[in-house]
Every structure is written in C-alpha cells, then in structure tokens.
Length: 295
Image 1 (cartoon, rainbow, N blue to C red):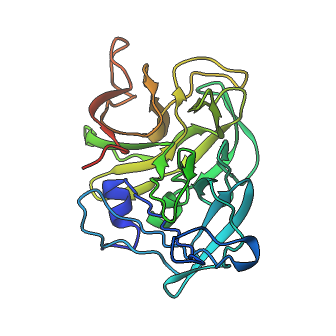
Image 2 (cartoon, rainbow, N blue to C red; image 1 turned 135 degrees about the horizontal axis):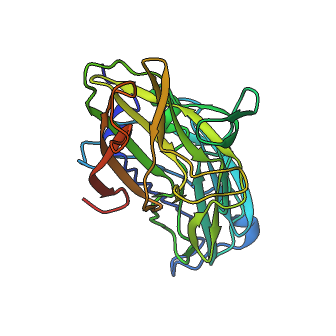
C-alpha cells in the first residue's frame, strides 16, 4: 500500500523550487526602497525521479530557510508557507535545508533508549533510531541546497541529498528466519570543505529499519567508512540479525558516499552448520544510484 512518502522512498530524489517575487515601484523596474518592499512569495515543490509529481507536502511539514543570514522556519499548511518573509535586500544569499531540525552544516540522527555494548561486534551503541515506517524514514532524509545568490526577482534551487539510502534484500536465507534485525549508522554528518562526508568522532546508532515484502530492509545512514575501527569500536556492520539464536551480520569494506542509494543482496548461511571458511552472511552490492542525478 502506498503512503504519501512511498515515492520518496522508491525514487529517493527530491527537487525544490523557490520562486521569490518582489513588486517594483516604478515603470523602469527599479527595486523598491525598504519602506515599500512587498512580502516575498515562496513556493516550494517536491517531486519524484520519474517526474510524476504525485508526492505532495502535508500540513505541518517544515523546512529551514536562510536569507542573508536570517533564518526562518517555514511551515506548510493548506497550500502555502508561513510565516510571510518581508524586507529582503538584494542581492541576497539563500540557503535551505530539510528537516528543519538540521542546519546547513550539520545533521544529527536522534536516538532513544539506553546505551549498550555489543559484545559480538565489540561496539558501543548509543541508542536506537526508529526508521520503521516510510514517514520515519523520510524524516532522516537530510538535504541542503548549495549556497545561491538571489540577484533578481526569482530563484530556482535544488535540495540535494546528503545521506545514504541503503536497501538490503535477503536473497537467500537457507531456510532460516531472521529476527531482531538492526542496521547501523554514525550519529552525525557534518559539512567539511563543502562536502558532506565527515562522520568521524561521533556515536554509533542502531537503526530499526523499514521492512518490506520479501525480507527487504531499508534505512538512511550517514556517509562514511563502515569498515574501520573508531573510538566506539568497530568495524561498524551495515546489518545484524539473529538466526537460530545466534547473532550474525555483514560489513561493507568500501566507502559509502553522500547522496548515493545502495542496494545489496544478502545471503544468510546457517551459523550452526557453516564451515569455518564460510562467512556467516555474504553481502553483494547490486546497484549504486546517484540520488541527486537529474532524470
């Protein structure tokens, strides 16, 4: 059954359009003086990769917007964004981000529950992040614009994905039924040298993934290195589960890059009968998709 975020999760691309219009005070189109400035009319649209446009904002959705360093929280209700934006001096520097709890430079994945130590993978877990529904998954879809200068009456910008979307499909389970499935992420992503790839020196978070038919697990995680040791232990697995009462999992030995969607096939070998030379889980990369690529 499709939800309002389903196409966001499937296509995993959003586009944002901000159109800012200011009235002119004379026939030669001179910009108005401060006392005559009109409110900025803001329109923000989001679309899926196939261009169908069948995803829409819902009441109380929010984005962050900065114009010349002044930050506003814009809230969508009944087809419009509030509060009104007034008194803009041109040229103006415009930045935008989603979700509103983030900033242009930093996004933190919130978590709940108690900190615990995973003695199988020897990692310290700060808590659980719940991504078990399309709505919860979409809230982790951290996006920002590139800084844009507004020099006339209209502006087009694009919100770019800064996280990674990971889909793991159990391709072969050898008759085993997995339970207690978790995926994992670093808790924070930061902008460093204008790239969103700094997830160092932050906590490890376990993720309750979104589960679809056929034992397919999805989560949104920070970019970074998931095969190196950190202060919290390591390496950090992409996924763990319990089969036949034994905890098993899989790691990925390549970088995960900002803005990419990764699809993996997972083979689960019986931990009670597998040979010492056979991995408990075999992870195969199937596809890498640039979520910010124009289609």
